[in-house]
Image (tube, rainbow, N blue to C red):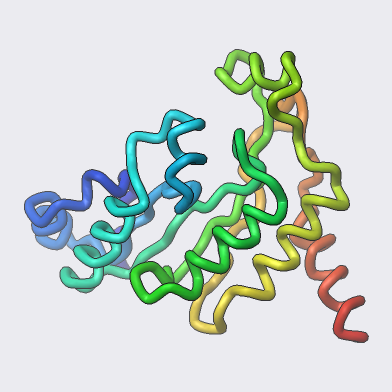
Length: 182
């Protein structure tokens, strides 16, 4: 039995990690969303790819399992950019998490993204585009890394635009099965 704590990459400093260890924490979840600095900035994330790499290094030094939240379809991204970003997350030595929550961005009323949706500078991926990205990401995930979740648990009535399908992972896995001929 272990304790899992969620924090931000910029808060993974030795003092904080030592405290988490003393409290019995064994796994740390960090919401990185992306490794692309321009995407992080466009989405008002207060972290950088360098801080994310430092967080991974510190977490490993303290012996924590790493569980990251990655998000596709963020403001400023594209399906191809999302695929590249995820491949970087799962293949570059500085990252390679033990576990991933792979979320599609959805529009919820009252958020800053509403303005971008209204002016056309952000749109949710079509189901085809989203499944294509998630298939590529799933296939790029190494065997040692578990994808624990593929949707956020936001009520469908609260989602203004974006994926509302609770069986999204099933759609992704069915597409993978089609591609490999199962």
